[in-house]
Length: 491
Image (cartoon, rainbow, N blue to C red; front, top):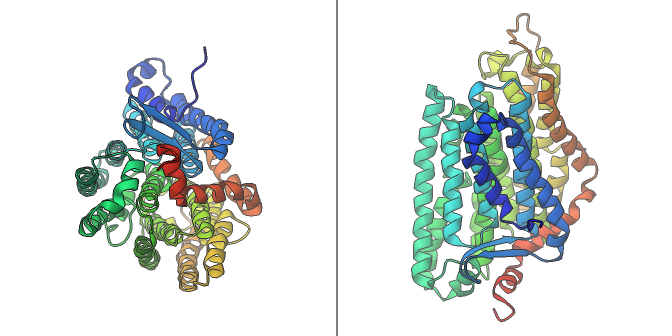
């Protein structure tokens, strides 16, 4: 008898293994399972891809649609699920193979990382508002605890700030869910989408505002992102790579999925999101110019790229949406590369301040070279993946005859080049005395090397994955197809 391969495994497997962690401690399987669990889920996602490209995979537990625990794996959510679990493999392998801090190899870290993966998978798969809130909280609580895991003053401060801000965001989102239920009597996303236009206009605006504030905080959009650099600075770089790489991407997917699903005409909401994305991009890139701490610089760089992705997705046409999804994947790859190489470099230098990083690239040539590769990719230089996705977005705007986003994206890229080349210059400045701790295990470079290889491959041959992003964009934008798939042809 074989077990059915369904979307529920993306949530159930990491949850089950996390709560059974005392068993894995006795068997000394924590690190192998931390790598193996997302690897198995990534393999499952790849195995389900042919079926997903044919039709969305739907699963409803307990009650028939539209009621019950509803999961939907379509071309758009598949991209996010594959990305989330790939990032889980990379970070898990880095923690296992590298000489990382002991607290990141203990049971608590194991549980929290698996819960974070389960929560992110659940957010992009669920078709129910209440379960969306539950998964949002699972991912959020895991992130709060991961920030404070080191238990020194900066980490505890980061965890406390993250807890307070994240809880406020969750309250706003929960209020919106309650209002939706009171107005429609439904929590199924498809059923709510079918009846959302019947909600009175002022109530629609209130629900939209509550959701924008709640998810705006979670997606780190201006002006709700003032807290982000402190969290990234206080957290271990490997943990920050999960925040930038998968957590914020899951929230972004939720935000745009709800906008495109609930609103028959998302043009006004999309225009607002484009504006927020543009402001986020320019403000974050400008502030990054003045940063003296590597972790804060990477945090503001991440915010700038989130703004770019929001700008592309908010336009709501197939070309920019596909480019935005592609850039979402590329940004995850780049930030995994940058944060994990930063973790290696920070083991050799007493501080993350730019003045203390002089000569870091000379002292750790491989880590320095990988950091430079990531910096060039995030700037969008050819032939790396960041160039391919940014070009796709720019072409989409140009073909639509809308040129102000093109000008802003190019301006942001110039600013970005300014501060990344500043750090690259410092990395290779001569330095007579460089304090270096025992070298990182050479196997720690293996997962980073895989990420670097993908950045080059997707830049040289983006045509290998173009179809996946086009299908993902169509799935994200096609509200009618989602309603028909869940509710039937009569919807």
